[in-house]
Image (cartoon, rainbow, N blue to C red; front, side):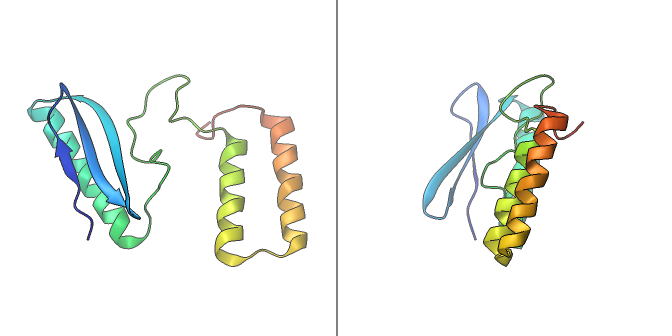
Length: 120
């Protein structure tokens, strides 16, 4: 089991752990106070559970605090579909015809949606 630590050495809290031999950290953007610590413990538990169950998101987008407007935690609908396609190829080894169809769908999504966030 991976040990996840809460780094309290700065004004804002950060989580640190090792994933596949690499040190990973996530800045939570919350103050080092009782409320921030409660939030950090919640995120720590969420990451630990995902690591144990195989639902861990190595991009960390799932765990980053959400903010309004354009920021690194937003992902476009097209990028999300492309990540989905890559994951399917990795896990199930899609046939060539399926890959071609998925690329066509991604192209149409790009034309229709542009940079629209996936959540919308």
